[in-house]
Image 1 (tube, chains in turn brown, orange):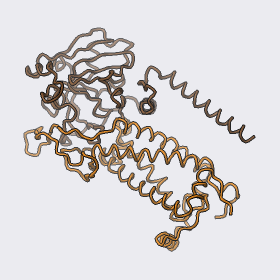
Image 2 (tube, chains in turn green, brown; image 1 turned 90 degrees about the vertical axis):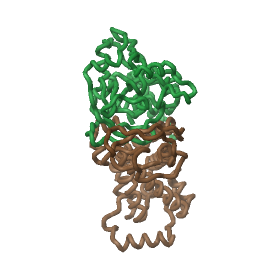
Image 3 (cartoon, helix red, strand yellow; image 1 turned 45 degrees about the vertical axis):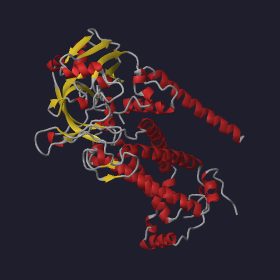
Image 4 (tube, one colour; image 1 turned 180 degrees about the horizontal axis):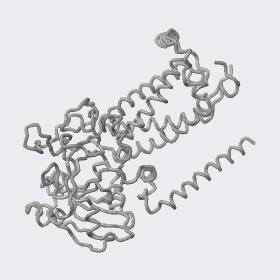
Length: 252
Length: 254
């Protein structure tokens, strides 16, 4: 008798869990990043879903004053055409020689007017300056002033199509990453061309880097080359975070 | 106080045993992955910011990242002499945060979810009032001193295998459940850029991201100390009976 009761209870519990999981999957299947059956990626996806569900909408991160600006290491790629690296990017070397006058940021995918922006095109759009805290997944943090154009302005200029859901970025240091439309349209998500009152330096991502302030540093991609607007999640293949063993969503 | 019913109050209830082991497993995983994460940047700071180009509060001699010298020469951001600087890192650091962080947060979900259920159940069933919270009348200096002296002389009472706890034992469980675990969860949340955007009060409470990280570390140190003493006491007070009490939950009748 005891055994039967236990099994029934367990069955009820399992049925409840399965149906809850089913609801979650059917409700958010398109919104959640893929997990490839990896339990760590399932945890990441759960954290992402929880943040979407529980955190207040488009809240802004804290902005600091000029006196809070502090020393700021340059890590990861510090020069995409470094001759000491295995695969220096020749194209970037050419652009750099000309002080990025020939640099173009192309925007493709689900936009009404695909095309490209030069550095002066971007500087012609309304700018935003913000002094924010950069938090690296390694554990360090630094405050800097960023000057650039809100990504939403650029997406507006290109004309987002109604089914646009994700924005992917490709860089000259051979990296691919993406953000959802909530982060893409967030007022503090900018394409930064200035840092601490000067042009963005090469170690920090010249000529233009992304700033995604509600996520960790590695989402703020340096050395931008191309933007692609998608309807479905694109993990960036073997150049993206997920296939390299890193979480796609890093709001925590 | 005398147990009101022999069968119910002498043994650990099923939900307490289940919660105990789920929380133990998640805590051990959190401690391990926390150490892995700390090894990527074994420096602690106070305030909002801190990095290899700013002075540290504490530098922990763990991993090859301890005081590594791999930096290009520094470049100043501004004209003045006191200007903050930047420098390129040329050193390939130890960094296993790809799986370390994701496993940390996966385990944290278990700690938070089961922890909240445990706290609610502890209040509702009276488990906390009956077994954990020290009775004010017991908290006399003489009784605390007596229990402390007994512990220091290694006069450890034989375990009952149930929740009949001593005074210091109650105090340490109380501190872990209601002070250290909430503190380590909150200081962890204060390190999240998305959560602090929504709830900036977390940054104000801990006086900044790096302060929260430092507090998170010291809460971890205290919890590890608790774990060591806890396991030592379990062994000292009758390992077999204690383990039986916390697993199958049957009291070893003499």
